Image (cartoon, rainbow, N blue to C red; front, side, top):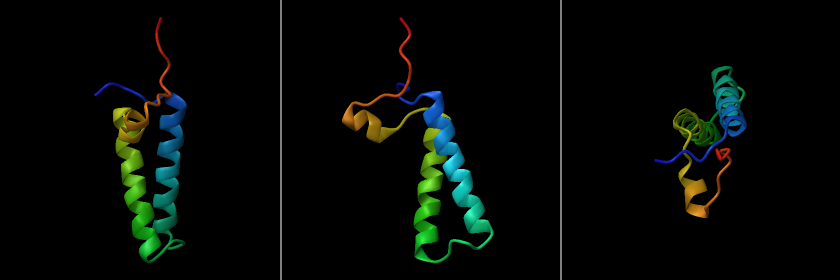
Length: 68
């Protein structure tokens, strides 16, 4: 897998995932929407750790800086 996510994108995804986890932990988000958000949070965490987003590659996007 070729990296297609830049540092800022990774930080944003990680922050959103942690935020969703905190909301769930404190019971602010419950029910079905909580499980949907937790699933998205796990996906965000995984993609931020591996610096690869399958949707970006599908649409030909990249936020990773190109070295010249």
